Image 1 (cartoon, rainbow, N blue to C red):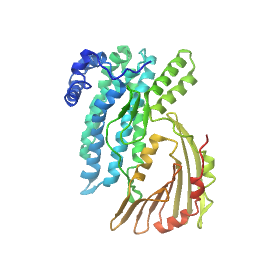
Image 2: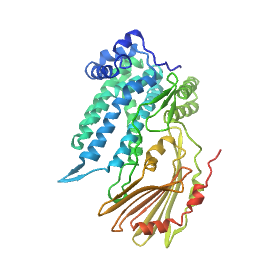
Image 3: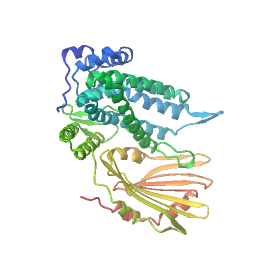
Image 4: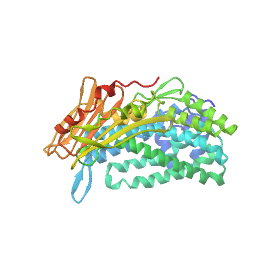
Length: 434
């Protein structure tokens, strides 16, 4: 299967958002999708755009709506009840905005891959560009509904808009994916289940840079909100604010392997190809992950006088990528410290969310709390603590991509002293398998 270049037929050029005046055409397409979905899907079916064109001339604008509105609502307006308003710190809100925006763009392609893979199971046809159009344009109402996040009290109205997007996708399924009408409901339901899972992934990664209640709230740095830069005729897409590049040629190759495996009934090979497609859609597998046992071996038995009371080391795989995480708890009386080491250097998309703060510097102080972000000897530090000594958090991003975090219900000076027992030099010296 070949992904078309950024070209349109003559008919499409008259009404498509990729032709003529971009903003005028964009608004026309948005209104048409909302008011005349049946006719609009037929029009889209006659168009022949590349994935990069839909990204750069449609998605980058609509996906920014919920991201920017969420920043306004939670960092500027604030949320709360009973006369108490809580606001996400400005820098943290900017990071959450960028991370959510970038991952939303990436997840459109991931969902298109899922839609393309599901189509044959419901009597439809596999054609990745059509699946991408289905997800990108079908989500229009959901993108617009994100504007309600600007007023947190109205955010639930965005759910109603998202439900209308489900209807839009349902109307487009028979047209673009050639799924028989009697099976369109089942196909759409399967897509929604996968979309919920994708949404959980986006929410999980975004939450990594969103402050938690109390002194463990973090800080972050913002990236840029430019559009995708395209190298070549719809082959490479660089997601804005990141160094992640989606190689659509790799996506196409993995898609062909999956179709061939499905044709010969090789479910194992088809599953592997699906993982490769999702990995390519999220910027590739990255480097080989560090072994969990290598990280666990560097967790000390004690932190000062506090013995280790629990430890866990695990490696998980999702969407063609591997995650390594080790953690331990140390306690003595009512004092508790949790130490966690996560190998984010092996996962490009995850590293964006978890280490966005490392590109910033910050020195913020209130009567109750202190938050700082700084660099020293090639290591990025993020620390936050309450002045009354009831809680503290210290995070270090090491040069090899290992994120070391310590947190506990004790003063920051005591936490720093305790974490000296962790051999950070040895952790930073760990080499990835070739």
